[in-house]
Length: 327
Image (cartoon, rainbow, N blue to C red; front, side, top):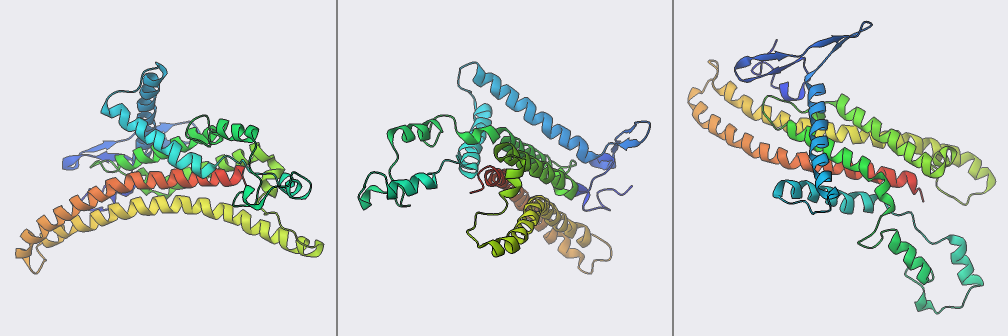
């Protein structure tokens, strides 16, 4: 089999073995299921490792918090900080509360309700909230405390972020690999996200209500509605598929691109050291420059690992919010 020197894309290519320094191969077993010979691959193992790391770390963090004492120590505080940041800065703002003024109440307040001065209405033209409505908003977590309606979907958003993050970070370790640099892996993640989005919208609006909500409310004459609404529904349906496809492609492309750049930079060393290279003296200039470039790109890859996990979680939360609060 090709070694590292023959395959510069080994870090983003799946295989049936792990390759250690010196060319040592650790072959992965195949499982005979009777009807099919199931081959374990490197990315399968790394995804299981990522899942187990998430489970172990957050089981420990939950145990600390469940005891009633704050999590202590930089390790636990770091993971708690990330979890709270995803909750407060990603899930809750992106999914929203779904609370809005009812249009009938708005019209009634203007037509037959108490007469209010212009400055009594808010900037959107709605009357001020009553004390009871303000209490509801507070209890829904619109303030900085309390349980937020979006917290129902928070476990999935957390799972997306930390699972993708650990897959990305494992890819930064030499001789392992980036599972998220493979389109099959990111495609599966995007498919799971789309199924969850559809299930969440169907649970909130009903199955028929969710699919009907793909078409925005429009005040159209009868003939125009018959012509335009089916066309808009088809466009929105394909938009639902495309935006989840983009979710897969952007994660795959960003992770693959980083490792490809590293491979290209390091390949300069091999090229400059080959007997056919016309300027052999440049080897001593190219080698340190390539190593420093690889270190710089590696540090950027570490940032990208967190950034792409954040983007994936943010878009997943945004899609969930669109499904459960279509208007």
